Length: 163
Image 1 (cartoon, one colour):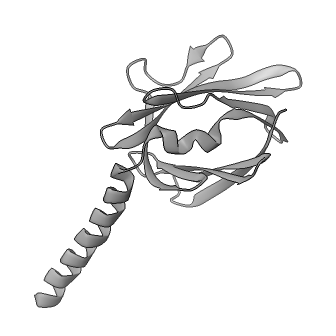
Image 2: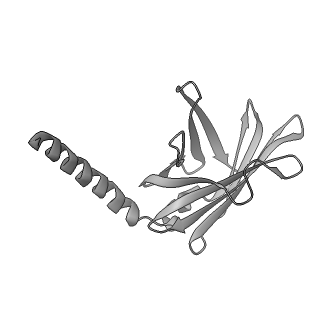
């Protein structure tokens, strides 16, 4: 019984420390993401624009074009929600046809923020998106998704800053 109580106390301290770190985080900590990022990928040519922090938010547009035709678009906003930044994501097909319900964006709170890196995790814990600035001209976007079979799949998008 004492071991179980000690274990619970230890987990609480660790969790409390992690959330205290995030409570101090703000959208301004994500300024490293700002810029127009591009890459050529098997899915198509990709472009992701992140505006710099303004007030309590950042916004982004994304497009993927293959053989001169749009594959899909995304609109993303990172908003300071309570004590942590939250990524709010919407996908669109050609014709601006949304994937998500109009009042239900895909929500991904920040779970870890370090210098030049942020990790967002979906509420159902099946998707993790990491943005990591690896040099002045390079940023990786790492997409980890848990499939219906329970296995994780990782896609790494190696973006280059357009100048």
